[in-house]
Length: 153
Image (tube, rainbow, N blue to C red):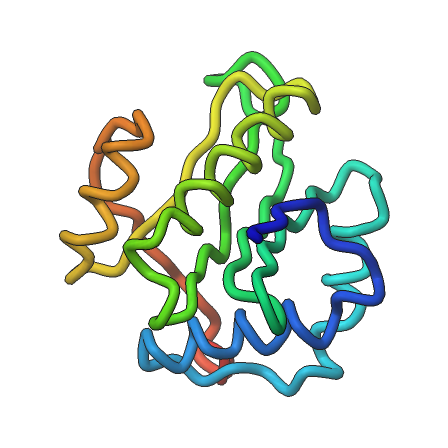
């Protein structure tokens, strides 16, 4: 049975494993897990940083969605950015991803957000179609700038 819920501190190893899987799949260079502890802890603290949604089924965690809260004039206040959304390969096309997105959207709205944004890989047509089915509008590319010495691009 699928269980979708907000992550807690005890979920740190599972969430970081899933996020690492996402970053490796995207060809990135994941930071060491211990470098992510403070960020994870802030996201699951229930404060203004954001939140983490985890989906468990059977033997463990199958999917994750992390969200950060931001403020902007264009949104007239608080909005959310879904930062890392990942479903393990063997659980894709099973409804797990949609359950995670629906839960995350409901929690973002309950937290006072009227806008949620996210990005996809430049080769992410499958992901774009998934998000469009969840009623996201394709509003263009997401671009990134980092310092030259940022090894976690």
